[in-house]
Amino acid sequence: MSTPKVVVIGSCMTDLVSYTPRLPALGETIHGHRFSVGFGGKGANQCIAATRLGATTAMVAMVGDDSFGQNYLQNFHDNGVNISHVGVTSEAATGVAPIAVDDAGDNCIIIIAGANLKMTAANIEKAEKMVKESTVVVCQGEITSEATLAALVMARKHNVTTLMNAAPADANLDPAIIENSVIFCVNESEAEVLTKIQVKRVEDAQLAAKILLTRGCRSVVITLGGDGAVYSTLDEHIYVPADKVTPVDTTGAGDAFVGALAYFLAYHPQLTMEEMMQRSCKIASVSVQAAGTQSSYPTRDKLPSHLFV
Ligand SMILES: Nc1ncnc2c1ncn2[C@@H]1O[C@H](COP(=O)(O)OP(=O)(O)OP(=O)(O)O)[C@@H](O)[C@H]1O
Ligand SMILES: *[C@@H]1O[C@H](CO)[C@@H](O)[C@H](O)[C@H]1NC(C)=O
Ligand SMILES: *[C@@H]1O[C@H](CO)[C@@H](O)[C@H](O)[C@H]1NC(C)=O
Image (cartoon, rainbow, N blue to C red; front, side, top):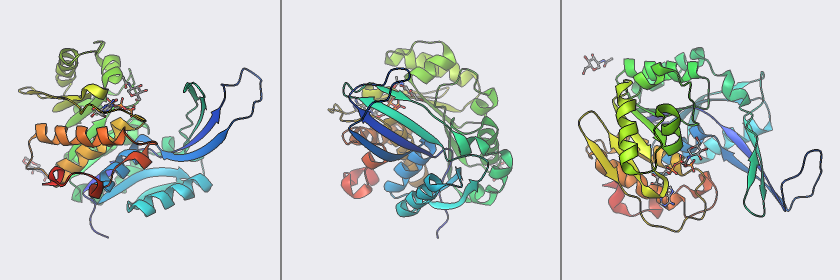
């Protein structure tokens, strides 16, 4: 197998979705209409998104010694992701997210991160050779911060670009994680939790980005949903609007964006950041026009060829 250029160090979760007429009350048992199982977890989503665009990728992750874990390994295999550093632990179950969605589209979600929280710095050390030979390392906030920080520090030691997506929002994020990120990427609500700036407009996002830059990352990306995204460094501020589209399902749009950005950083380093951001927004906006999370991520052959030159 060829050397992975994009290495994602993060989470795998299995979504267990129950569609019900309404959400059950305390102590109540109700019948739902339908059940579906989906592959999720921000790390895995971003890895699959980059792979669909043609990146050679590897996942560094942990699943439980159970059927959800085995199915997840099969999902990575089917998508062509290198899983030589996906561990199987008997200490916890594979991460799951039981979700109830009612007819009005409201939902209740329980996340049990399980095996994802068994990842340690020692697991990351084992992947050092692969990290060293890669071009981009992508991290998120769904595994232990010890493992995430170890990954960022290791990538930095080897001059590998780091793309840190600080999701979900965490007011107590380890400052060393920001310091060790080349690109620090958040959405509006995560930016607000970290900076206390309410991000509603592009100007707010640029102000929040300035604050994050003072904490030591080299650059900041803030995604703004249907409004696009901003990119800031100490000497440039770029705003990229998103295409006007009619969204079908925006779940996982942020992960589609991060996966695409990782792909462009690794495979089209000659592009300006503005061009990479435009293309990543374009790909994320394609993903919101299809249902599901990983199932909505486009493959390269379904996208305009000018995105890949
Ligand atoms: N309604 C939309 N129309 C067009 N593009 C969209 C829309 N929503 C999201 N996008 C694209 O996806 C990118 C990421 O979206 P967003 O900022 O909502 O991320 P997120 O909040 O992390 O997403 P999620 O939590 O739903 O995965 C945006 O920068 C944009 O390019
Ligand atoms: C990383 O880059 C710096 C500056 O370009 C260089 O001095 C250093 O030797 C590089 N380190 C590695 C491990 O390649
Ligand atoms: C930002 O992402 C979080 C998940 O980390 C999500 O819960 C939240 O709804 C998103 N915020 C916006 C404004 O999209």
